[in-house]
Length: 303
Length: 295
Image (cartoon, rainbow over all chains, first blue to last red; front, side, top):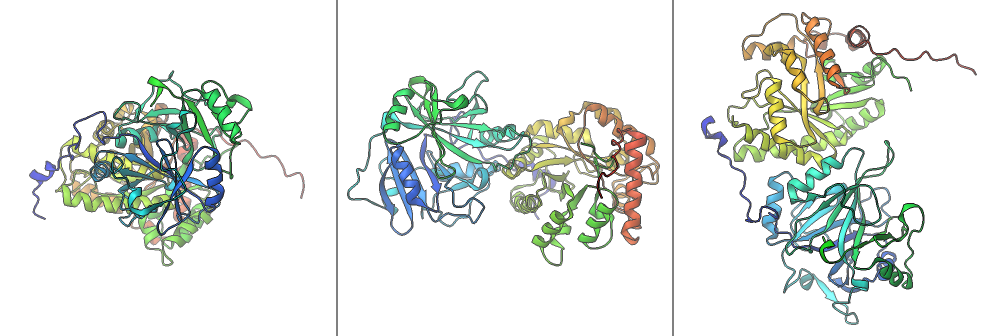
């Protein structure tokens, strides 16, 4: 060991590769959200109701790409875990658009994220990723402008539109994450330290749920970001696992969007404090675990 | 719900002789409901890690915590990368036990930095690694630690790192060995104390690091058996007054105790816990249980 004690302190933190201190990863939005599903066709029917069209299939694996507007949803039938409830679809990954995927991955790993194994993941692409909540992954994608990651390994369906329009102006708004009892502070620190998310002030709320901690991603340009809502269980003792629980979809006019989705067959919860309102609406649970939340999101309210 | 006066106290596996299953059974028989485990308990188990974890689960004992990650913070690049891999392996073992506290001792490494910001940055990174697994990091000042060897210094590092799942581990032995004034406990925040380990020893002073190390590893005794009983009482009363309601674990390394029948040693631990619960802390006695109605 050649390092002398006097030089031991010379290991400096890796300087941020971005000059934007508020957005060191250069986050520019969400590229895709991935579901793992053992019955992908059943999930596909739910996604179709929600306005997502099947646009491409992976060349060699049972992985499907759904799309509406700027939202890409990947359904991966090969990423089952052998865990309990494996027959229910789960949100397995979120992919962030960043300026430099490898640099972003290095940045968060240097600060304590768990890198994933180097072999290509579900997408068969070597996309850098780190572990997120409950066995999920957070991918970093920098090919999304002219050449996309789907151009390489996906075959477009000849009959499908490549860019089906969004229903009711739908766009990514955020994701609800279930956390354990007294774990909101931990996860807030996680997203702040690694991804430079900011916790919203107490009074600022979106959607229908009155509780939870709201975190906003940095994003460039403004309005391309997304939110994470941390929700602790109501009971002190809970068997609920920590996980990404549901996707929030932003729409400019919630009641109008609810009507459009209802015409497509989507059912919304009407009970308790979550009945559809101008602020938001929550669908019923499909396939035991899949639900979506509509959130009013327009102009300056876009995350 | 009634709780046993022993419910706040647990033993460390390092105090007892024998295989893991015997240690767990003996602790349970002595009335304890929690156990502090060491990585050897898992990795040295003849049937492997999975079998050891299954034995812990089958015992019904709660895991107080898992020990110990050493010489982690402040290392230069190649050593740091190596130590991160060790830390990740320890975290996986801890998570496999359902343990929520990993004990980390302040570094003794001559290769480690003395820069407190560097130490804090590394511990913050460790806390981030632990966070998705639901593990909290208890950072403890070893009384022969190179830069951090008294708990107020460890507290300074914890405050600098400022991470919700990074807190302090307090070990009574090291306080007595370094003769840190107990009044300084009042500077702490109870919620940031993640673990308290208790033990005593048989002489007043340990002047050199070497003497502290030798005493710590061979001659510790249970609270109430050593010469610092008064200070030990004051320590738990101060922590109690501060609002600490977490676990107390008996960290008793003793060469004689690992050469005695485990039940005999566990009885000494039980007597120590009862002394602390009933005579020192004066915890409320459990409500009497009514007679069984039906046979």
